[in-house]
Length: 317
Picture 1: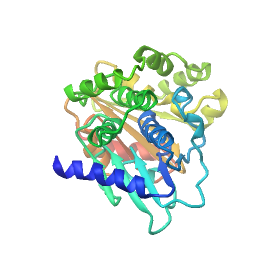
Picture 2: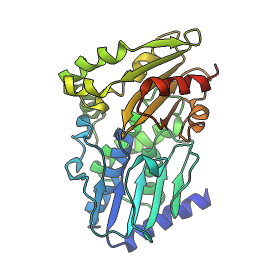
Picture 3: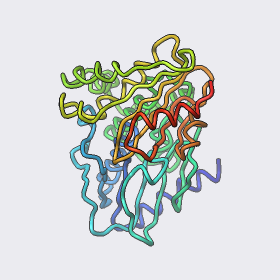
Picture 4: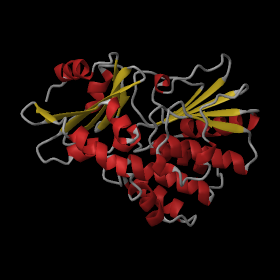
């Protein structure tokens, strides 16, 4: 614990001593990576620390536009920066950015991965979200958590724990939530923003994905996939489709779901499981990572069906 506390203090000192900070989120961003970045962005804005939040995706999740400073996220890399902070990235390959040499790097994450990077690594595999790890950074350094920061942290924790339903949700999770609520944030309002602002396009594309459903291994394993042309046909974004993997996992006989789609000329696979199936072990076979019940990997092909066969050949349930 003392070693981790030193990392929190070292991180704060590095932030304070830097002239311009680049906060980096991963491609196909979810609420955890965006909320962590915006938590830091609001902290730095409140303390007059120069910075930018970077994301290299074509689109950002529309449901997160209620978060403070969401409109400040950019896909343009500043000409100068002397510190990079990765949030919820797991692997640098997920960000699609070339970092300048001799720049200090801080990595804040909660994924199990085959790769480690950063001058300072604040990684806690036991946490249900990177936002929980980041909360410890604020708390251990006795930093003020404003209402704007708390709103962002709460959103990341709520979303990555799937509404507090995953096995990673612990007593510590709710202790953090209780402290965040003391800032005056409204959990009902946050939930409404996250869950009750779907686009019509989303409901046009979900049936297309669900129609690809196949069961394997006596029904234990389900596969679904997204074709890029469906995004153009419906006007939906890829982020709006992500919850489909949890919808399929709700099927009683299914214990594991593989969701495939082409991203940046490779097949990206999201794995989800219930029961005692550890999908992080499967992800590691493809240099991916994650948690026992939620992991991700990339297969170097643009052919979804080829990727699906490669994946199924490695799954033993």
